[in-house]
Length: 169
Image (tube, rainbow, N blue to C red):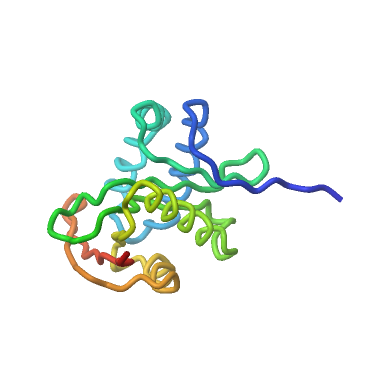
């Protein structure tokens, strides 16, 4: 019998390649059939190891969900970017590789991001999700998020609706 260490920790520059691989796999799985193929590929390609290296070096809050030696997922978060919404913090991204979804790991990663934000004075938070991404909507609802705003984002020639979920202080 072996034991596998499961941990959530801040990303290091040496993690950039592995974070890029987790991003690639998670995004292709989450958005295939939602974001048009060529646009999805552009988005994935822009977030290669060099992008993650730069983000980590600049001090972006990137937390990793590690399962043994593998980076199984990540979250990226900080100050709320939508000035029109009265929430202090924002989880910009939270993704797990497909084989780690549905096991409670996303909840743990979200809780860790929320705790870090609260410890830095951001007690109320918001998260945006594409309205066609039913698993994400179900996930944020299950975590107690309440829909508070709608917007849209254009990917190539396709405009998609998105929903903001919030957790007040």
